[in-house]
Amino acid sequence: MGSLSLPHARNTLLLSIMALFLFSGLNAFAADPFVEVDGRVVIEAENYESKANTGVRDWYIFPRSSSPTPDPDGAHTSGAGNGKYVEALPDTRVTHEDPLQENVNFFATGNNAPRMNYPVKINSAGRYYIRARSIWTGTEDNGVHFGYDGQWPTSGSSAQWCGDWNLWQWSGNRRTDAEHCGIYNALYLDLSAGEHTIMVAMREDGFELDRFILTKDSSYFPSGIGPDESARTTGDDTSTTPPGELDSRFAETTLITGVEYYTDRDYQLTNVPTWYEGMETIITPNDDRNRTDSSDYLSFTMPYDGTVYVAYDSRAISVPTWLNDFLDTGDTILTSLSTQPSLKIYSKDYDAGDIINFGANKAPGFTGSVVSNYIVFYGNGTSSPVTCTLDGDFNTTSMIVGVSYYTDRSYTITGGIPDWMLGRTLIQTPNDEKYDNSASGYIKFTTPVSWWVYVLFDSRSASVPDWLNGWERYTRYGDIQTSLSTQPSMKLYRKMFDAGQCVNLGGNYGPGSSSEYRSNYAVVYGK
Image 1: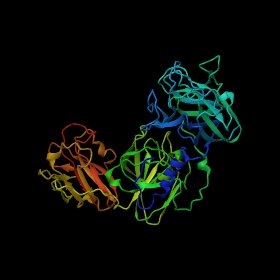
Image 2: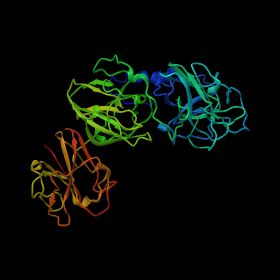
Image 3: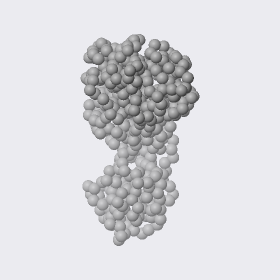
């Protein structure tokens, strides 16, 4: 993992995690077994517990900034599950004409071959057929061995791929002397009930593995990326961490653009809204993404009066029930995970000393498919170092009938103001800046109270800028009327902000907006 910016003395846990990487030589993922359910186990190849027999060749997780050479066919992250896969490198035997070096670039069996180990828990004994997903660019890069508990049965050896090159594809074939493309359903492991270690060993260097499945259904064959990775037994464990104390599998850091947001992945946050930057953050293991605990998954004590935010994968159709009383802020965080559109931000206020108790990522109430784990951050409205003051181009006045809503025009508000909005603060804007197309930073100010902020937007607009997409189109009291004869009215959009929070708005013609003629918008806030 790259370095993280940690608040005060909270780097102890993360340093321990980093030390595990440095001194063990193994991949520091959770050791809890993947659980077989209904005769099936699904495992991402990069989520091995440990490796063995590395030296002449090793397994490397992609994407990566550097890897041993030669690697003639380059990286293939596009199309891989979670955008990750593993490859046995270096790759010196690409074609049949290249020299074959026994136990260097080719291993006839899994014995002494570079291997990855995956703990599993089998609830139902029986024959488990292997389905594995690979991509290959040559006839000498398309084979691998499967075994378990130190055994390499013939039925698990020489998994083979044939067909189109340069495409991620599933195979369930085992190569034989008579059938070089392999025999379907001849690739399997006979497993008893209980815990086992599934082993994947190199047969040919340059082999790339995305994920694999053990299934008791001999007729089952996945398509596309296939089903979600199986859950681990951590979901059944009873935590010994006292209530309100953060469990050791989580880590604390500071919310900034570029920070790695899981303890077991190197994905980064690529666009954090400025008003959240600098907040204290709890990052989680993405290996926990399939857990279903309704509570007691993540717990900590709120150190001050403030707001807790949960950043949750936007691919979810519905969020867990434990998030139901949180407010959808409409804000998002972008990430480096190519398959993840964004993390949606939900908020809730807490008092100093409150024990925060959250359920797991796929707790009851969740619906959807592939969803990465959530993260948590919190603040008291004073943690952001970003300057957030209203620019001198704008004026503030009271929202009343007859008030001018531009600094450089005499147009006035003529009606439609709800009684409760009268007397609130109106930010007057220059109509000469109506063509401003900035995505953010056009208007910035700090809200004095926790309440709604309203944007009054020209009703001639067919679509609003992207920065307004997360705001509610508020129609309960109708639109605001003006004296501008060519302007039918001003539409109301609203969004809740916390006291001390920075409101950061883009331009009238910011990215995503329609192009018809319209006047500039204005803003109302206060309580």
